[in-house]
Image (cartoon, rainbow, N blue to C red):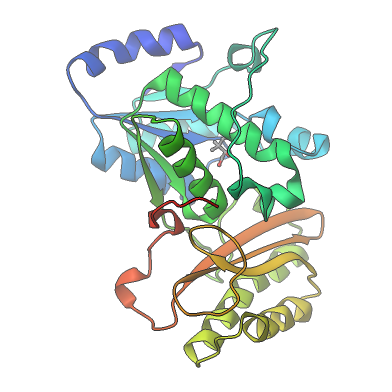
Length: 300
Ligand code: PAF
């Protein structure tokens, strides 16, 4: 695996495979790799001729300076893990390479970003994500880019970005990888104290509770949320949000008539965690790993 730190070098190494018509896969990351990241890299490796992993802790998407400073970083370990998987290029630019002095452009997706994470983290969060992802797509020129279902809203926003700006890249959204007790893998889990780590599995239990209520025939979203709220409160967790939303618009549903997305965000101790579950009124095992972002985009 080769470590690349500048856009010029990246373009130079990708010129030949691109000219030869090789498929380029990009896995955008902020590092601190866990099995979730590695599963995206393996998928890219299985589907593409050349795999580029970007490692850039993007300052513009952090709404909280302390969160940015404390974000877990372990570049050496990350490089070793990516190399073991057979990633071809690890692109790890410095902040000034991505945002040179005088940088003044923001790429912003409307509608879908106003709710959930956008509402709780502020407008700048998704603007930071869509701006850096646009830049990464322009730098790498990937045929396919891989994102995790754990960040379901991000995946939907990026699909909309790509569609609205006619970006020639296919977006693949891959299933959430979980700990044995159901906790979704996240770089932020490293910050959980042992006690908070045990409590954090309640987010998964809350989503289970919504799913069970819907499977038992509950069609009223308010009623389906009740056992989920109870599961969180049993672990002394007060959610920032726990919503049952449309998989296309992310607007809360009035009634559970078709596929919905149950989304939750909560602070567990000092660590903010998110999770989600795609839920269908009539369970279909074939859709177990389906992603919100497979839904056809519509105007939010
Ligand atoms: O999901 C992430 O890790 C980040 O939001 C991304 C897509 C790499 C952009 O910085």
